[in-house]
Image (tube, rainbow, N blue to C red; front, side):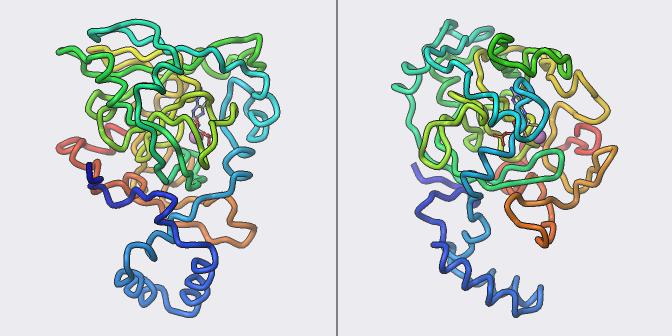
Length: 303
Ligand SMILES: Nc1nc2c(c(=O)[nH]1)N[C@H]1C(S)=C(S)[C@@H](COP(=O)(O)O)O[C@H]1N2
Ligand SMILES: [Mo]
């Protein structure tokens, strides 16, 4: 099936590093607006340079996974001991075929593909990640979504013996997240099993984590063990911890500030000391694909 969204690229679309560097050097010699106009006239392959993935190092050593500690380096240090095999995902609630789905069995049923997505943390840093995964919709269809289901709730594994961070009640464990059913069924919504063509490292949410590229990173729950179809908006961890700062929707929105900082710009990981902050894009650059999900909603109220 042809993919209709414009911001999804595969590794093959990404301009080789050398070409990227040349283009950047040329761009550096142009005024901002002139540069943009020229960029607009370039073929798609050249535009793809703006989605140059971050390095393996960036993606795997600067992480948020509070079950292993709240420092950015803690997950890489402590998640190695997590047992990720065997692994199963309980799918329950309003589905035709509730049960414990073995991870390997799920893999056998799904078509894996690579998607290069922007990833924007609510803390205003960002990166570009080449994920491997399958569409969440395919898994939900496998279980059979029943009439009446309106939301999807997710839970992360809670295993204190392997998760030193859970000794601290920073959050009410297990980590929980949720989506509206139409958001969950959207073709951009991915269940990731890998990055850079390799299995997910534990610190990035092995063996299976959600990726919702138009929402702040905390919605992209890691190491999922339960998916529940429900008719009510499910409680979510960061919202329970601080509802004023973290809404259920949490769509990336440069116009709605976090109470303690602006969301208008972001720091791309790996940019180095003198990198300029980049403007944050509405819906993290996926506006064309997802804005219609929120027609008629006040995005400042449902933040
Ligand atoms: N279970 C769980 N999932 C989680 C988190 C967490 O602490 N625990 N952190 C979230 C946040 S705040 C972000 S920004 C992303 C980070 O994903 P990454 O470390 O793979 O970049 O994971 C999200 N998923
Ligand atoms: Mo985050």
